[in-house]
Image (cartoon, rainbow over all chains, first blue to last red):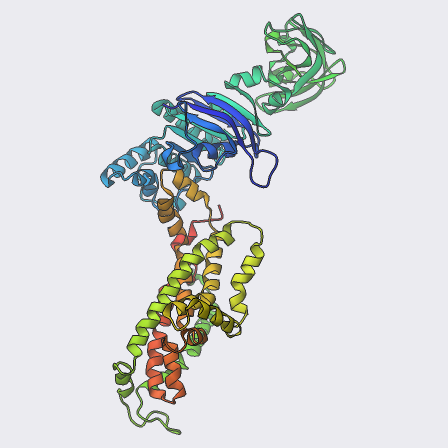
Length: 347
Length: 274
């Protein structure tokens, strides 16, 4: 059980002026699964390597349970990093790969063999111990690299894009495996990803990093309901931003005067709400009711995406495909915005 | 795969192989015959009389062939080991990293293969005199590094340019010290290069004549020097016997490295290009 504190961690690569990572501070609770989320090149992998000791920070500190670990060599930190491309040692068998960490710790051979078998069971690859990594599929290699990391019982496990190289059904399998392992073993896990969906399905808490800076650190749900700014909301697929003024529980905008939730901020800003929270047609009620004209409709199988015009404002909404079946572009329909789904971003 | 090749391909390969073997082996045959000859004069096709005299002499204490053989082996082994020790880090730097002046370093390392040794050896000679290295085995070993290093460094640079150093990060992260990481992860990956480059270095050192002659001052008598002495004295039979001994390492090394030279070695296959 290890609590990880990252304090003002900064990395400026030699020969560059802009920091790859700019004063990142983060508290990861013990036994939690945290995602570092951001577009590629935003400093996520840099952060991981600094925690793992594979890269020296320019400034700032990394503490485990309150004690700085920066002076420790990577092999003494109790951290294992699992790389995105698995990096299984090609000339070793699967079993030797998994047992590598124990061998480095001078564990005796019989014990290594026992634990390797246990690990192979755990990641559901029994009988594959004698194979070479090149003979395994991508998903199997991924599981071997996970087993190789877990066998040394690290205090902190770092995963670099753990699901990104897998196809859709393997992703779900792997996600379930990681989640169940995490619950079973209870180690602190930090993983990086550029995919907000991956972060949401896997993580207890998500840290969004944009341009080398921490934007928001919260449980996944709040990135949808309470984003800190427009860039954050957009990263999570937010599409509706209406400028106006928030005061006394109302939002004055070209959409009209709309009821706000009690915790909404006051002042000039943008009203933001998610497309999937717009109620349409028969589902619309009297709360913040609007008249909307359909300007475009895209059928997406499980749902339909509508472009609507309210006055001169464009908004997007997601609707049940059954609902839009008897609607056509050009129709005017009722829409309502539940106050609980509204959020104000002030600048 | 060989089974799938067409008949013309196979015949062509057979012809090429035979030509190569004839080209390499044919010139050696008179040498081998001479070493067993007692008088072999034009126009006879074969020696009039056979004898082991040359071989007896070559292995006798007075000829100094055996001493010279051990000395040459020692010098070439030392040059090989030093080449590996310098060539591995240098090859890593050139194959993996970008740095200012890299082109210049590459050119300087290649220079000995372009500039003939004899053109610079006199300058080296005066430097070695100042350092007290002339007429010593140490001096000969060091001067042999000039022609051996380009091969070693080039082979290692090639290996490293196809090598992913993240494997080392992974090993460190799994608990391996820097030394163990090198031993368990880096070394197996670059071993084919070390073998091929090292054996090249051995052979290049093995065949040095001018550098050994000038820096060794005639006191460090390696096999090529000894061979040249007998050859210029017109002793074809002894030259033949020593020549046979002299080419032996080359053949052994060729047989040992054929597997690595053909690029089928298992250790290279998995690394790089990920």
